[in-house]
Length: 126
Image 1 (cartoon, rainbow, N blue to C red):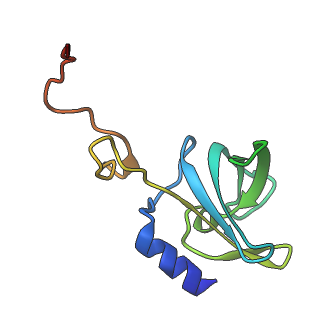
Image 2: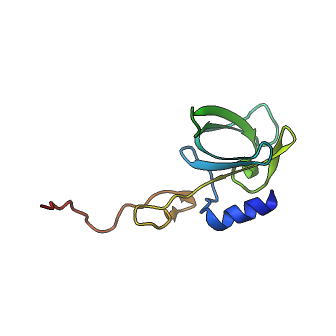
C-alpha cells in the first residue's frame, strides 16, 4: 500500500487540507478500490474524548453512494494510512487544475480559487 500511495503522490496533485466540497481520492487495498468521492460534511464526533470526525462523502460511482466514515483528521487528510475492517485505506483531497492548466493556488492555508487578474471579454467570431 505504501508503494501505491508513493506512486500516486507522483502523479496526483494532492491538497494538504480537506474541506467540505473537496473531491478526495479513496484507495483501498482489499477489495482493491481507487475511487473519487465528494466531501459533503465534516462534523465533530462529540461522543469521543479524542478528536474524531464524521466525514460524509458521496462516492462518485454509478449510482452515487452516500457514506459516512468516522475518522481522525490525520486519516481524512492523507497523513496516514488507516484500517477499516482490518483492511488498509487512504483518503486525501485532490487539487484539480484551473482552466489555464495550472493548479488552483492556496490562499492563507485554505484552498480558494483566485479570480482572473486580467479582463476577459467574449469576442464574436464570424
